[in-house]
Amino acid sequence: MEATTAQANELERRIDLAIAIADVEKVMEQRLKRMGKNMKVPGFRPGKVPFSIVKQQHGDQARHEVLSEELDRVFGETVTEKKMRVAGYPRIEPKTTESTTHIEFSAIFEVYPEFTPGDLATAEVERPVLEVSAAEVDKTLDILRKQRVSYEDTDRAAAKEDRVVIDFLGKKDGVPFAGGEAKDYPFVLGQGMMLPDFENAVEGAKAGDSKTFDLAFPADYHATDLAGQTVQFDVTVKQVQAPVLPELNAEFATSMGIADGDVAKMRAEIETNLKREVKRRIEGKLKDQVMEALIKANPISVPTSLVDMEIQRLMQAARQDMEQRGMKVKDMPIQPEWFADQAKRRVTLGLILAEVVKAEKLQATPEQVRAMVEENAQSYEHPEEVIRWYYAQPQRLQEVEGVAIENNVVAWVLGKAKVTDKAAVFDELMGQKQ
Image 1 (cartoon, rainbow, N blue to C red):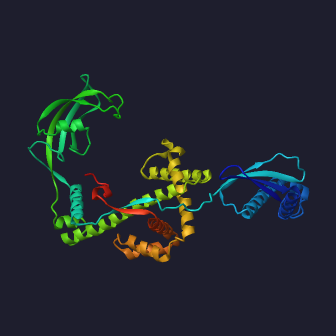
Image 2 (image 1 turned 180 degrees about the vertical axis):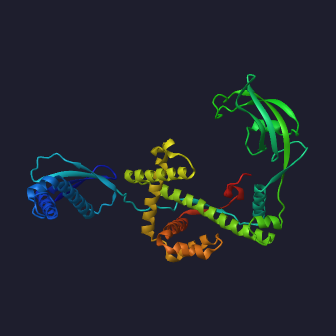
Image 3 (image 1 turned 45 degrees about the horizontal axis):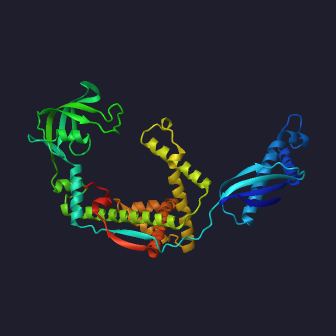
């Protein structure tokens, strides 16, 4: 067996493999003889089938199997000898030669990039800082109350956050248009359910009022026949209802899962949950910045084969998500290019993180994993059962271990980079509208 290597580009490699025909014939003959011992052919006793018949019936299959095995072997030996880290699978191409003693092939494949983690001394990271206080608890309680809002009739003019019930009829050039009519249509002012100009026309009206007004549809309106067009609406307000928020009392606390209705206990639980969520979001923002810093400090090339495999994983995950949402995947063709950028970023980060973890010895310790499992379990009613569930099967800990490793990398980068603390705005951090 012979092998030579050549480099085609930065990550692609080509290995020329030569397999001795005599070796293939020898191994093939041994295999066919073993097969002949068990063959059953009419007219011959078991194990007495002539070799020529065995070869005639199974020679092609045996040759293919031996060639494949020999290729795998010589390829594996060559890349091991040359200390090549193969990414993905090789593409095997036969070579046309005049050799009568060898069968020659070329194996084309990619290798993992070799690099030393870049310097992070100039990287800049902003660390969000936010202490959860009574104000944040109050704001969260307001949101929870609004989620449980009820409405009652009022005879005053409609204002933002009021629920109105209307009849409307839209006309274009005096003719009603499709989708422009509804009876007893309810919506809440200020929530963006209707176009702003429509809501502005309804705001200030009382129950029983009727009005006619012009409305210009935006140029990018989803209904192309109405986009950029001016129409006329007739609207009758049938009901105006003012929002009524629940009181912060024992009944509300009970609805929030506090069995004895203790309002103070409810506030304490909300504060604990808020602190946990604020911590998680700050860690998430820090992690995003750290990963971006690592990418900038390590401008590496990545194997196309790994990116393609990641694209396939992302596509499969998207299909499963659609199916879980009740969508028919076959009616929605998913294109690989939709996931190309995300896949390349994930592969790039994976390679960089692996190199940093190896170089800086940032593997997760059992103590770290245990602490994270216990922290995650605290948000459940019976934490000890959750902990037992994780440890019942070691593979369940893999995801936790992965997060622990990322946390180690974040801590390491923060120790190298220029870190400045910046006060975070609660609403922005939590992704809430002002």
